[in-house]
Length: 115
Image (cartoon, rainbow, N blue to C red; front, side):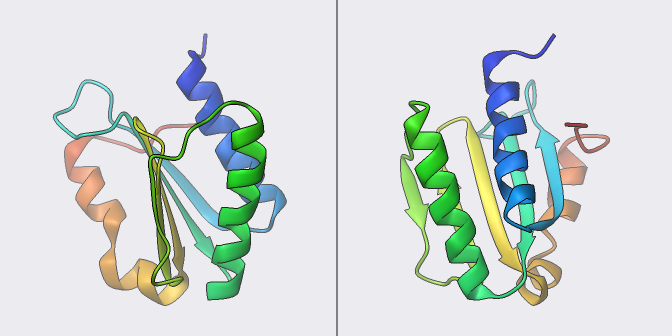
């Protein structure tokens, strides 16, 4: 049975997928020493697409009572949205390859979480 935050993560993934975000990965970090429970990573086609994905997430999640504690969108090639216990990273493909956040997170857990 999914808890509330897992349902929110599933909704995040669905919103990104519906808006043509690609290569969505979720890392369940509950029980680890990492500072959040879930990390969602997705690839946007271009920087403007990343901004559009962020707008869709804000619109749909805020309607459901989610609070965005911080949004780092100064560089639209890598947008970070902080929902407290969930962090969303929206990358363009080149930035995602460059920073390879998945490799770092994979060292914290054994395998990506299935949505």
